[in-house]
Amino acid sequence: MRKVHFTETVLRDANQSLIATRMPFEKFEPILSTMDKAGYYSMECWGGATFDSCLRYLNEDPWERLRKIREACPNTKLQMLLRGQNILGYKHYPDDIVRLFVKKSVENGIDIIRIFDALNDVRNIEVAVDETLKNGAHASGTICYTVSPIHNLESNVKLAKTMVDMGVQSICIKDMAGIMGPQEAYDLVKALKENVKVPIVVHTHCTTGLGPITLQRAVDAGADVIDTATSCFSGGTSQPATESLAYIFRQEGYEVDLKEDVLREVNAFFKPIQQGYLADKTLNPRMMMTETEALTYQVPGGMLSNLVAQLTAQNNLDRLDDVLKEVPNVRKDLGYPPLVTPMSQMVGVQATSNILAGERYKNVSKEVVAYLAGEYGKAPGEVDAELQKKVLGDRKPITERFANTLEPGFEKAKAEIGDKAHSDEDVLSYIAFPPQAEAYFDKRDEKAKNSFTYSIRKA
Ligand code: CO
Image 1 (cartoon, rainbow, N blue to C red):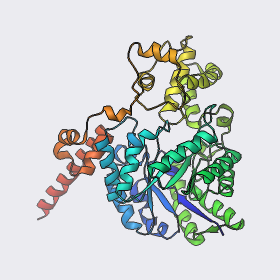
Image 2 (image 1 turned 90 degrees about the horizontal axis):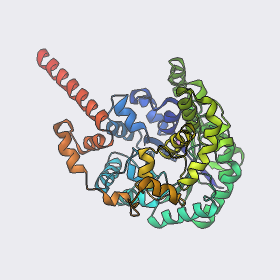
Image 3 (image 1 turned 120 degrees about the vertical axis):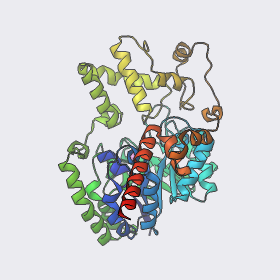
Image 4 (image 1 turned 180 degrees about the vertical axis):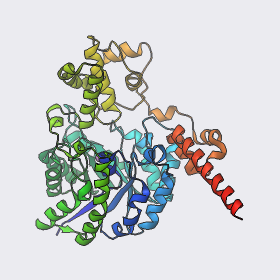
């Protein structure tokens, strides 16, 4: 009997997709020891936007959050999402920082690191993969799923093989926009199973309504692990429901390790939290609805709503159709980057500008200039040579890995933040999100000072 494994995402992607990662540690702390007994393959609980959100909005030390989850869940593999050479942000960091970040993530409790690059440029994940393996953790290589004339089964299989040669122990198909159809999932998983020996993980979102069927077909084709969220935090922009998918696969005769009574307990715990977020409007009901427009335009839901917001703010919403028609043209000029952050924003802004200025590439953002200069990595396809020449002039685009051009950065940052950082972990927080981390350190010191004065007075 074949087994289907489940990664529970309520603490990371579901939290991020539905309520902008606003769930503080103390809200979910009481359920952690129960979740530890559910039989998940892993719990995705860190990385992605959780780190930024801890420092920026929740006044929490992200590293401490990780250590506390580790302590409460000794039997479950803890998983994080890492953007390769960008760590958790959007710029490229030097290798010493990437290595230390990975090392400290593992030291503080992470077992599995899902590593991706927005352009699927493997040079941008190789250092993170290498360091993950050196520290004895599981490196999951990621295919950012996208549809274009140059992306096909062959290119995806080639990418997977390259990552397996690097040493990754699983391959994750990451469909960030929820646009991978059931048949596409079936064909891709089947092709991967025929060509690589490692387990295949499938990650999607319910945004367009395809999610549960896509996962079902992916498993039929041989997928080993699927990402799901406890039912009250599932659906819409989040993942398909853990309980429903477990039900489906049991009915179809697959072996499922999840304990039904524990899953019920977990969901019963999160239900009032979900209700609270609905009541205080942290959770917008629109996030839980099905939006099929992404299928028509082949752009992620988040990108579409950004375009609408941008055009509305400029009183130009009537140009939306023109902008949507321009998106694939810009994407072609840029060599078909996957529409994932930050490329989705860059392509969206450029398409809007091309339409509203009445002239293509009259204005080019500094991000697009950097992209054309090779600073984000290698474009999946050919970039438009004329555009590149127009933007860069005599400057030659770099062809080597951008991080090769960066000086080591940890010691410099450590000196810069000084005593405010109490550990190497603090320095890494500062490197990832400088003003947010510094503000957090100040509040932490203030709090420690106050409690010190208080205890002296009491004495
Ligand atoms: Co996701």
